[in-house]
Length: 113
Image (cartoon, rainbow, N blue to C red; front, top):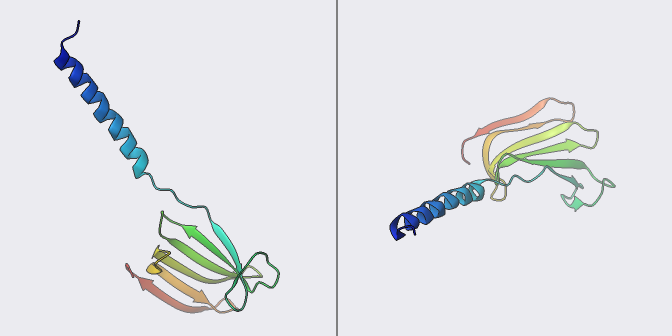
């Protein structure tokens, strides 16, 4: 029969190692897929391309941040906004917009809002 102290140490080591594995799984971020929306002239999100004025694509860079790009219905990039936190609308990075002819309209750089 095995002495109680080594057996307790073995179970304790097993519990610690198991806990480390669970911590790694919990620390992994879940990055949502690219979200595409169609927007009308009033800014309302539509269910289809009918009556849409532009298309908005939201690409997450992590679980809360990402880039929002607006495209004209012909496919031209209208704006690109980089966010540290999308829901709270905290800018981080380069934000640009373009005229319909493709000329740069505005450029701004943000660091943590």
